[in-house]
Image (cartoon, rainbow, N blue to C red; front, side, top):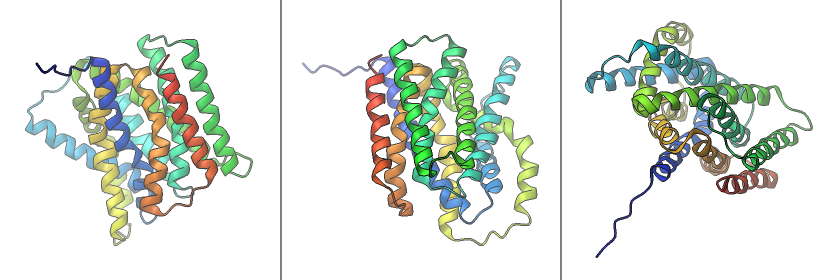
Length: 291
């Protein structure tokens, strides 16, 4: 008699989280392709506007009622973090640094998410877990300093701020997902962001020259549809099912994924030290799973 494979809720959460990370890993190369020819403000605001319009259609077709007013504050936080500030900082910084470099710096995001998640949700990971996470974060900072010729570049500082903002958005979204479901959270967050973003987006777009290579539009629509919306469906569901602190550590895998994708899509020149630091954080995430 065949035995059915039944995954625990935690393992299902890890699978959903991994799918989200795979989608997010293409965000740096997609953003780089877009900002090479398009204004970073257009890319940063436009990805949220497109996602918001798509989310509006999805919610309308699915006949989803408005969420309760008690959730509005959290939705505003999520929409401003992942729909406005994070994309803008990412777009501005990536005018000057490579996608593979960005991918490694963003490797610090799991630590920031774990910290915010522990503070907001009451989760209490072990001391060993924190030590490993801090070591991974310091490794990412060391990588940035080496790539910056001995100093942290302004773009790296912008990325670090983006990491903090992203961690807040991820955590608040995960807490909402426990009540509303991951896909509804990101859809409503993008809808809430539309009234704030649509006017500045149009003001940036009107004077722009939009006749740019198709690669820029491929990158723009990827970050708008996948990075800003679809990948969040899996990511928020994974965080809600598997625990914010635990599932967020899967994002330590993202630097290595982004490096490979950046070489494939953008022909990024990647030094051996980049592989070393990417491998280092992967080893750490495997160890942190034990704690």
